[in-house]
Image 1 (tube, rainbow, N blue to C red):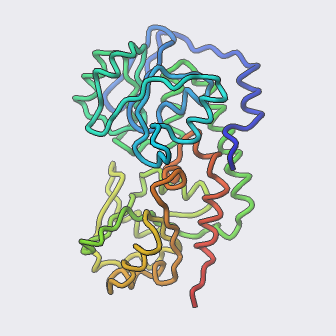
Image 2: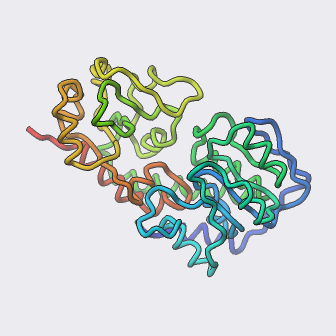
Image 3: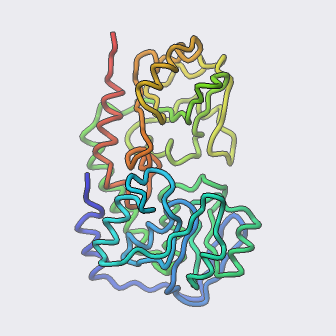
Length: 323
């Protein structure tokens, strides 16, 4: 599905007039941020926070360069490039976050607000950024913000809370329409395994129940296995268990992970990994370092861009029988 936003939502933004009263105060993990007036110059750090203003028709003055899934190396994911083209906008400043936040680059954009609702910023990062401009941090814990919360939090931070609500509703409607075409996924239990290291298969890493990759599987009609819920620590987006305990995941119907088939074939040779029922059935969705792999971590613009394709992959894994 290569469209970005539903026509109905685009029309809504074109005709509606919304107002957010100021001063506006937004709560987050580090306290509260008060905005005295509607921000005009918007910057963002962390993952995909810039997609909220872009989806709402606002071009940020700067945001983080894509460091995963960027096929052509231009620092932009394809749905971001497409949206900038739709808005007739040039590429703004791109912050290189390979070694952490580039505070100087952020400051050079002279922002009125800095969006970081989905990020891993620390208290020290927050304090430094706050000396540049008011910061909209994550609601509770690092990297556990859902795509809905990302939209609500960042939209409020740019004075477009009502439009953010409409964007969430539109995306939910698109998801519901697409999921209805795949009843075979209903009730299937999906586990998202982190990158498995061929050099050390003594443990199995997984994204926890609070991670939005896992919650996106629930959006797509699946459920989170009880074993994953029990192994997830509060406030943590990932976990790890001994491979000797792989039998605890015998209630997993589909595994989603990063890698290719050759790598999975090597993993399956490991006697412990081979005991993983979903792996034994080859009920696995393999994601590469490409836009599809990136979009498994859902964002406002990526959801409609890859929704149908991702559902197809999940459906194929859920119904796969190697015997």
